[in-house]
Image 1 (cartoon, each protein chain N blue to C red):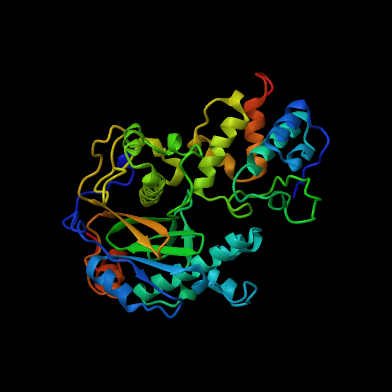
Image 2 (image 1 turned 45 degrees about the vertical axis):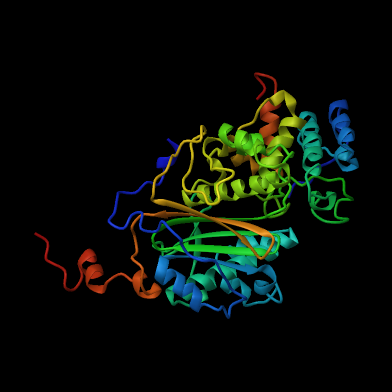
Length: 133
Length: 293
C-alpha cells in the first residue's frame, strides 16, 4: 500500500484545494515526484467534492493517516463506494478540476478508474508536457 | 454499430417474449418465497426478483460459513474497505445464488459465480441461465432469463441527477430536448428512469459503461420503453428486445432489458436447463453416439 506524503504541493494544487474548501486536499502529496503530488492534490479535491465521499474514506480510515494521506491503492468501487452514477459525475468533476485536459471520454477513462493510483497516473501522463509523458 | 454487439442468429422463438413480461417478485431472505419466482420463469422464461438489503444481510460478516458461500468472490470481499459496499456485496451474492438455485435446483454452495472480461457475472456451468444484478441503498435486484440476455438496474427514484453534470454525459440530443418538455417537478425522476434503462441495456449487451450513453437512448416520456433509440430518436432495435420499468418498494426505479434470442422454451426451470443425456452423449462421442464416418 502506498500512502501519500504531504508537502510538495505548488500554488496550483493548494489553490485548487482551497477553492473547493477541503483541508485534506491541501495537505496531499505523494512520494513519486512534485508533478504527481500536485496532480494528487487536485484529484483529492475533486473526489472530496463528490457526495458521500469523506476524508476518512479517502485516507483509508479514521485516524489512520491523520486524515491527510491519499492512499493510491484505494479502489473507487469497493473502497470508496463509487457506483456508476458517481463515476459519471467524477468524470464531470475531473473536467472541471482539470480544465486543461478538455473533454474526457468515459470509455477511455474507465481502465484508469480502478484505483486512486491508476487515476493519478493517467492524469499525470495527460498533464505531462510533450516529450515527458 | 453499437447495437449489433450480441446479435444472435434468428431463432424460432425470437420475439416471443414481447408483451407483459414477468412480474417482479419480492423475496424476504433465503426462505423465499420461491414458488412465484419459479412460476415466472416457467411462464415467461425470465424473472425479476427484488429484496430489502436487511433481509439478506448475514448476521455476522465474519461468519466462517460465509467464505464457502461466496466462493471465489471471498477474495474481493476480504479486501473491501467500504462497510456498506461490503455488506451489499455479500448480501447480493447470497441472494443471487439462492435465486438461481430456486430455478436450477442446486445448493447455493454448489454454484460458482464467475465474471466475464468486463465484469459481467455468470454462473459457471449454467451459462444458459443469464443473470444480472443491481443494488443500491437498501434494495437488491436480481434478473434471470433462459431466453437470451438480461440486464437490470435499480436507483433511488429521488436520487439527484439533474444539475450534477449528468445530462450531457448520458443523454442523446433527442433525450435532452425531450427532457426539457417534461415538467420540472418530474424531470429528475425521468432522468433517473432513463439512467436505469441505459444501465439495464448496456448490462444486457455486456458492455456496461464502456458503451457511450450518449449514443443510444429511450423516450423520456414513454410509459414503457419499446425500443432503443438512435441519438435522433429513431428506433434502433426490434421486437427481440423488451424493456420494463417499475417502481418498487415505494422508492426505487427498477428497469429490466430483456433480449429474447429464442433460447429456452418456457416450462419447468430445472428441467429446461438440463442438457438431454442422449444429446450430450452424441455431442461428446460417448455411449449411444454414432460412430465417426
